[in-house]
Length: 138
Image (cartoon, rainbow, N blue to C red; front, side):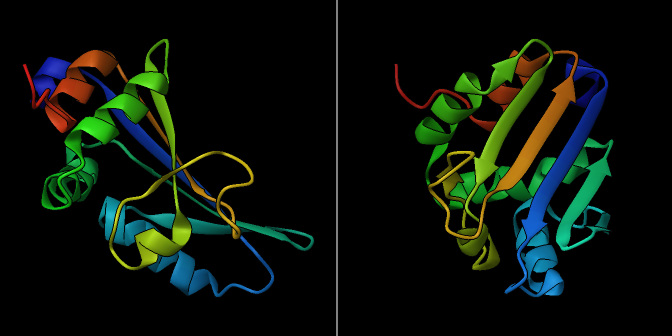
């Protein structure tokens, strides 16, 4: 599959609010995106976790969760809306992710603690979406 989509880079970012434990936010991200390496960046009172991976394996857990939760059609719609040139951008609810579930979110206002922002850059976004979320109806 990785040869079909070419180069791949998964970037993830989540704000860590003053009331949040950075380790719990780290766990939330890793429960949906696997063992992606994350770094805590602190700029004054503003803290955020950022991570990057360059292998398709970074999306394996996400791939499995989409199937386990039976949300392929909804996920496909969100991912297609998030295509911008050679990247896909979408947002996940932090609390749902901590529980090991996928719940897509808007960038602002929907998730009280702020969402997890995921950006996937690849040569073939449509091919990646077809792999992650194949059409389930005719």
